[in-house]
Figure (cartoon, rainbow, N blue to C red):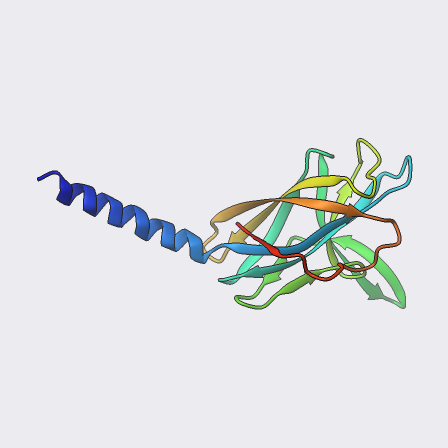
Length: 158
């Protein structure tokens, strides 16, 4: 007779997992630009998609204490970079974080970032309900002259 409470508990657990799954963010083609010796900062780029309206609000990496979400934009005929409080991800619409646009900035680097390395980055997303979700990625490092992601090699769902 214990099976009915167990089934009810299982149903509740599965229902809560289904709710979590809907809020997930997909990260595709993540990469970090390599640095030269003594360079203190670099950018991380990727394509983000969310099942529900959400927002990229923060990021972190063991490579540095200082990770910010930035935007490059023309202002008075000059390309300027500035920190932004977040990047909106409309439900079902991919948002590209790319050179010359929105990106994740890794600053005060502890070491040189070399092509072929992999950089761990944790992205923090916030839904309309204020709940936060973290997504850990491993971003390969591409050469200094890289300007865009190569052809898709698959995607990471978290």
